[in-house]
Amino acid sequence: MSDVAGPEIQRLIELLAKLPGLGPRSARRVALQLIKKRDVLMTPLADALTRAAEAIKTCSECGNLDVNDPCKICTAPGRDAGLICVVEDVGDLWALERAHAFSGRYHILGGVLSALDGVRPDDLNIAKLIERANREETREVILALNATVDGAATSHFLSDRLKDAGVEISSIARGVPVGGELDYLDDGTLAAALKSRRPS
Amino acid sequence: MSDVAGPEIQRLIELLAKLPGLGPRSARRVALQLIKKRDVLMTPLADALTRAAEAIKTCSECGNLDVNDPCKICTAPGRDAGLICVVEDVGDLWALERAHAFSGRYHILGGVLSALDGVRPDDLNIAKLIERANREETREVILALNATVDGAATSHFLSDRLKDAGVEISSIARGVPVGGELDYLDDGTLAAALKSRRPS
Image (cartoon, rainbow over all chains, first blue to last red; front, side, top):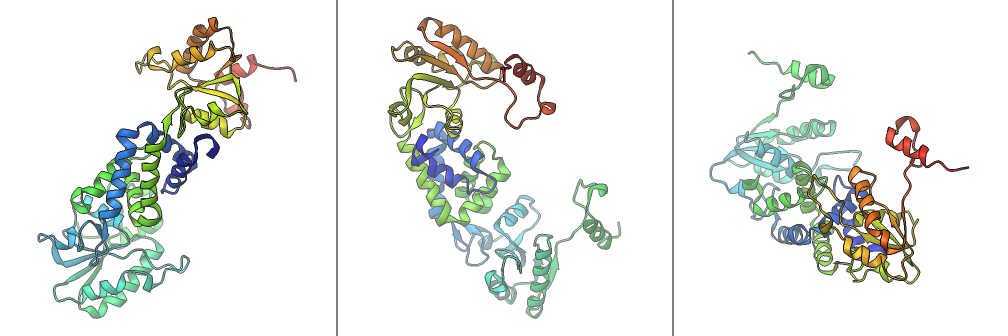
């Protein structure tokens, strides 16, 4: 490859292959497409990347990624500062925002505790969460970590650490997803859905 | 989305979603990964794109993409200038080069004739191919277009246009791919493999 098209293309393919979901083959396809559409795709993408790399910061309050610090969500006057929704990752924040289901603020944990991956409490954005939970204005901390073993263990750990802050602590519900068919759901979800049943 | 993370991220996601194989969801995932790995991935990728966009040209001889014009393959002293392998796309040239199976030169057609997509002979890099075939040095033109209906029609068209050039015209073989099982192959391939059988 490298002796066919030169180091510029080779370097581009190597970097593209590091992106999630792309392997060497799809990276080649993407690189080729980019080179062919130099003016409408490649140059704009290079500019967008440069601009984003320069402008985007991590919010010192919640850990969100934004061009402002504190971020737009932490400074939005319309959002309830008394509610803090704890998520693993910025992608989870985006997902919740797309659902338009939450109007409080967020806290990005930056991962979950994991003995296997060697993620310890100090590696996560926990100290800042405790500090925020202890503020006068904070009424409730909603734990919205992923429904994995590590997510559940981290939720448990956080509940324990937050219990002295004098705030309500809750977790998002587990159950049958909208449109989900019981026949295709795993036992754990069915058990959780039954346990959390509500009068209708 | 756009009111969560600002127009910089939104623009990046929109451009990434235009890449082949990426949709809106995977573009978001890629964008997030890029932003998180600003120093090791985002900035290098921006630089690689900028550099490639500036440096890479289309070879005026064969249509290949390279930083030199004529390209490295057209100017390589070790390659047989008497053999021209016609391919649809630069990706096909890369595939053949990876196979280390050909030591002649290439000609990138830039697509195939297609009534459905409105691709006519003038849209393809055919005039230059005729010119190259008519040169003293050229002995053989190998048609290596994809084994699709449009590819076959284009091969037929090219054979017709090249017959006055006084060069040998050949097509790459169709048959059972290496490791292929007869049971899983389509009828067309099996028929072609039988028809092109060779004494063993």
